[in-house]
Length: 463
Image 1: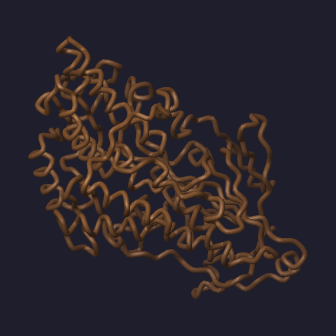
Image 2 (image 1 turned 90 degrees about the horizontal axis):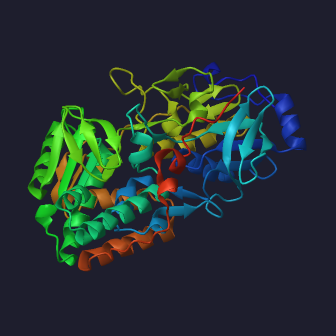
Image 3 (image 1 turned 45 degrees about the vertical axis):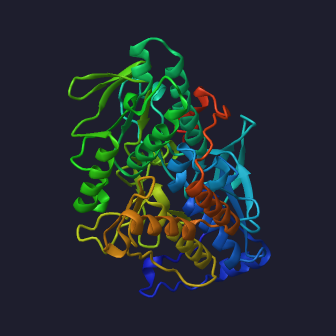
């Protein structure tokens, strides 16, 4: 099912409903298929359920999990300040009448309007669609660094967050029991690669975790710990600007976290890493947060891409009857002087999901098309304790004011009142009581490796 209308046909974005579309809609509901349950897919499904009646459309969401992970708080999961289920918003119920199909899409037939889904049944099955939304999110960017896939830990999923937490605590345990000083030193050396949001926040919060917990081990002291943050760039948190980046460096430096800029890891092994300056560091922990990229499915669509993201128009349309949004889509930012695409952040994915719902409904004859326009509201980064940096509406904040803005932003953005209350309660308890440091052992090492944890093996295909 398709229409001849195009969002560009009207300056006001009003697209008339074709007679054959109206006739078809009166006989059978359209099949709207959403691939992905990240912020873009979640909000697209939620708003479509409100805009379109059951008679107008059937809404199906294909997701690798049965929940939306509120990923900005994954560093707090890794640091043990939040339990994993606290930041998991169940899809069933939260998305109204949408049907949830748990699985992975490994083939899209644009001509036949079907998507092949692989779940527990390896043979899989086909889902038909009249309207398709690609909201596949992103996976950790993997470079051809020897040993990365086997040794590095990413932080994009709850599986990775929980495993990192257990792994770091386990290193303290093993360092306390060994009598070999070299092994002890290696187990108490932690390296984070990538000084963007994920790397900086995770390193800062995990370092605080180890400092607070090491007093419980009689043979260890805080002076035995080595935390290192490395990045090829010349600044940390470059998106927040020079002033806030300098402040972050001072905070991390006072805590004893070493920051090495203009440096990266060139080789990894289970017992250590080689840096780009040729030095070797013995370690058992390498956190890899050097950026994100769309998953293999998006990379193999055979459509125009910009830095790996499929190019969409102002209405987030990719091609006839197909839309894309979130981390896997590149939409030009008209407010950017150099006309760069909107950055792949949760803030944009959330709002793009809502616009997707409006435009898909409009393509079925319900309402009018709307272009995606959004001024960045600012960015935040939690450095643990009372320290944070934030830039709400372009105003640079540090310390406690930034901390309040950061926490408030997250509570406003979380799409579930119950989840908001549980997280807020945990934060209050954490202010007066040290979070329990326990290894749950729920995630095995193989499941936590980057390709497995993020479903990023290039096994997908399209036609």
